[in-house]
Amino acid sequence: MAAPKKKGLGRGLESLFSGVEINAEDLKKEEEFDKEDGIIFIDINEMKPNTNQPRKSFNDEKIEELAKSIEMHGIIQPIMVRDSRNGYEIVAGERRWRAARRAGLKKVPCLIRELDEQQNMLIAIIENMQREDLNPIEEALALEEMIKTHGLTQEEVSRSIGKSRPYIANSLRLLKLPEKVRGYVLEGNLTNGHARAIAGMKDEEKQIETADKAVSEGWSVREIERFTNGESEEVKKRPKARPREKKREIKEIENQLKDILGTKVTVDYNIKKGKIEIEYYSREELERLYELLLTLK
Image 1 (tube, helix red, strand yellow):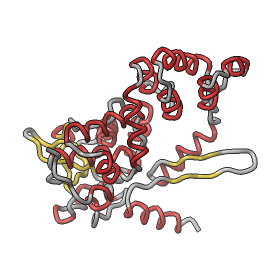
Image 2 (cartoon, helix red, strand yellow; image 1 turned 30 degrees about the vertical axis):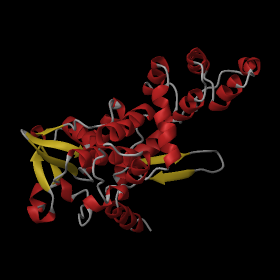
Image 3 (cartoon, rainbow, N blue to C red; image 1 turned 180 degrees about the vertical axis):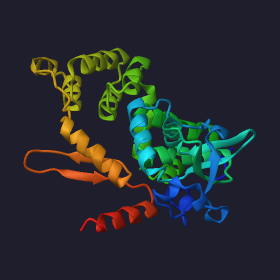
């Protein structure tokens, strides 16, 4: 029997954070808050990771970057938790919790929510998908868990996480890839596009062969498609594709902007033109960034 549907989760995290207004400076000062704000400071050692956390690996370099940002600006968005037998379980915000521990924080700002297992899992998945893309295999495993454990249909999953039904189906197909190919994706050696192109092949040996060549020779998704269409000789003649690396000064600019704005900033640089992307994760944070940018006039 399918589990009863939970309404409102399709709108993401906004409703769960509604009415909470915070800023970076205030989050460094515990005395600025009381329980009426909905935010309380909890001992970092009384919290434990979410058993339904879809992310299986955490990039140590990114955790370190976030820890440095927290040292300077505090935690911009409170961590969402729920009561557990011994303390609290993190629902959303495990990366922030890990970074806060590394930054040496003793207590962190939290929102306590009463959530059942299904809501807990859905929010953990949504939070990861909105804040930082999950590895394609991790995402597929999380979607499969929603369907198998909680009896949701692909249509219900689609509405819950705000992705199309074909997106859900294509994601689940990745779980049928051979273990070696899934390993390449988990390690970041193959992208989502590579994995989906390989998943379209019917022969398992051909899938592994293609994945091996794509990793060792740096094939693009288009080159995988050519190989599957029998154009292997043309692919072999092509020079090995090298991933484009950002210059050190561009990375430094990104880090400086991240420190100033308190959120992830990406600079897409070219000689003649480019763009700067500033990420935000809630309506309140958008308003904070808007007001901050207005002061730069």
